[in-house]
Amino acid sequence: MTTLLLARHGLTPLTGPVLAGWTPEVHLSDAGRAQAEALALRLAPLELDAIVSSPLERCRETAQAIAGGRGAQVLTDERFGECRYGDWTGRPLAELAEDPLWPVVQTHPSAVTFPGGESLPSVQHRAVAAVREWNARLGPRAVYLVCSHGDVIKSIVADAMGLHLDQFQRIAADPASLTVIRYTPMRPFVLRLNDVGGDVTGLRPREGSEEEDGGENPTGSDAAVGGGSGTT
Image (tube, rainbow, N blue to C red; front, side, top):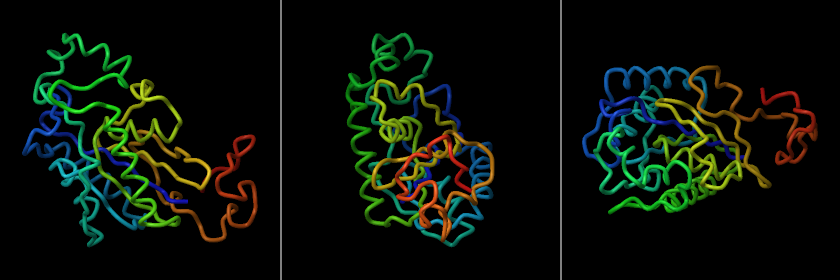
């Protein structure tokens, strides 16, 4: 049961009014650095087997805040990088909302290829392929963190929940939020979504837990009938 923690980067000066995309040298703002440090403090009690980041500065800075107190290395994987928005990159969102492609992005994202850029299905494909590769590389007992971007995180969550990509706009991924997915042999479980507070110590499966003892979830892949007693 590999546990994936998805962290979105903290705020930047462009977050909100501008579609940053792959704009170079977009760093965390003061508020974003504070968010990254707060997330690092929340995650401090949790042992992580790897910390992986998008290559973009805002993600690497967030990931480094998490890794810093651990003396851990931040690994990069371009497949967790932001969607390549092409001609939309660096433009104000208020301006983009007037573009004829905007309502398609909102209601039919599986049909969207950004002009001069990437399609949203290709973003999901590369990100999910990267998750599966890291899961296999780190093993079934691993708990690891990936720092990425909103649309990338939403596409991974949609896959984990068995949702068509056209539903991914129903998912939120706020700056410095934490989303947690546990991958079992049968199915993924979304343990947390867009979490911006709370204890994390229960996210690593306990030795001798009910899953291992043949309790309410004997295979680790079974859904708890009746809701179950929780993961902690």
